[in-house]
Length: 253
Image (cartoon, rainbow, N blue to C red; front, side, top):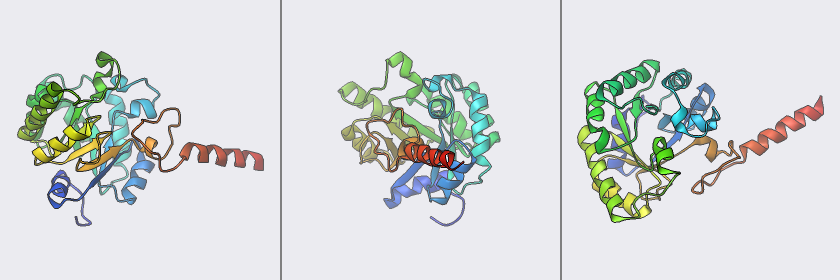
C-alpha cells in the first residue's frame, strides 16, 4: 500500500496479498489522528460510542445526529486511513432510509458506511453501493439486536447459524460489500467463512483466522475500566495511568 489515501479498494486488496488488516474505533479528532499516525488503515466511527463515550446502555440509543457529530470530529483529522461510519439503529429499515442515512454520514465526512445484517438488508446494500458509497458488512452478533436477543451471544455454534452466516456473507458479497466484520462468531465458522468469500473478514471476538481484527480502542488501551470484553487483552492500563497523573498533579498544587 502506498502513502496515498487508503480506499475501500485498498482494504479489499489486502486480503489478496495475505496482509492482516488492523482496524480500530475512533470517535473524535485526537484519537483519529493518533491512530492514523500509528498506521491503522481502517478507522471506524462506531455506534459503540454510545457506551464508551456517551454512557448509554447499548447502541440502540445512538441517534443519527450523534453519529454525524462524531464523524465530523473524526474527519477533521483528515486521516490517511479509510474512515468508516456505522449506520445507527433503525436508520436503514428501507432502501430509501438507507440511502438517505448513508448520504448524511458521507456528507459529515465518512468515506464508507457499515450496517448490520446480511440477506435481510441486501436491497439496502445494493442501493448504497450503486450510489457510489463503499459498504462494510457486519455479521454474527449484531449489537443493534442485543435487546431482542437478551444479551451478547456467540454465533455459529449450531448448524442453522453456520448456514445462515455463510448465506448472509454471500449476500453481502453479491450486493457489493468490500468487507465483513464478524462479531462473536465461532473460530471454526469464522475461518470457513473467511476462506469462502473473496472480500476481507475483520473479526472481533471471532478467532485468529479472519483476514483482520477490529477492537474498540478504549478496550485496547484500558480506557473503559468498568467493563472489558473477555476476548480483549488490554495493551496498557490507560485509566489507571490517567488517575495517577491527575492525582500526582493535584498533590503538586
